[in-house]
Image (cartoon, rainbow, N blue to C red; front, side, top):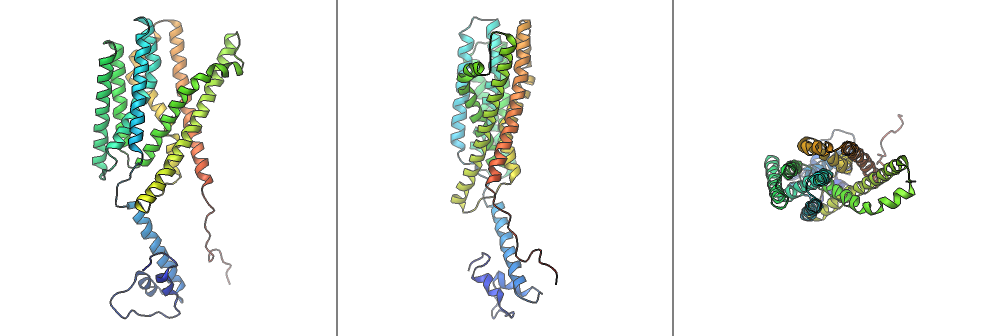
Length: 364
């Protein structure tokens, strides 16, 4: 017996006369048609179809399984490798310089990349650990615990491989806090949205590193000359171009992940809970939100390191202020461009709104 509108069961309700069931068993469509007080069976058919659609929506929304984020193991491996690469590159840069002033400046410069990587890694590893947990409270507690474990491992790795000083302790403590916050984020109910945000952030961060090779040619293209003002203007345009492209790639990555996860859920379970446009909006803006969250974590946990680097000289103070402003601007650009990109791509996939034939009929 088909439960779909227009099937054999629903067609039986279109008889001109109501037929009472001869046995104690009645189909859902017949019961709906029998309870209809209208002059014909068409209203009963509409009610039966609506009932079937509502039941299907309930089945999709509950699903019987917790929301599953596909590809969590790949995201966890990539983000862990990215965090290890950021820690290694920071350590090499610090150890390659003479101790003291230069090491402090480089530590402050490299801190945002380490914190962003720790934030994403805490989220992806926690997402992997809690992917099959159904209860919301248990899932959140397990996600926070996983983030705490990632933070402890990161802090121990930094303390064992970096020089033992106040700068190292600041980096380790701030990175651990970022991993815990990322783990708590993975405890959200919408696991697919969290997976899309982490993928978008990784895409944007990897692009920024690759884009560094094109900064000098673009500076010349934007008119960087011998004067300081021309160099600053060119650097501003290079930074805006980088943020624009990073936001575009982040938005596309978030949309592709959500689309892929929905199709995989349909193949896996037969149904998939549809995500409305606010989910795509949050996923597209997620990379920018994490960058702004990174800045908040840095200015709270890494405040001492930033103040120490700014106190080295007047030029360092100006540089740290300019870098902080640039990071905030970059986060805002990535947030809005990513969200707009995801919404535009998602909107182009929507078909025309269905219109009922009996709707808006002129009165007799």
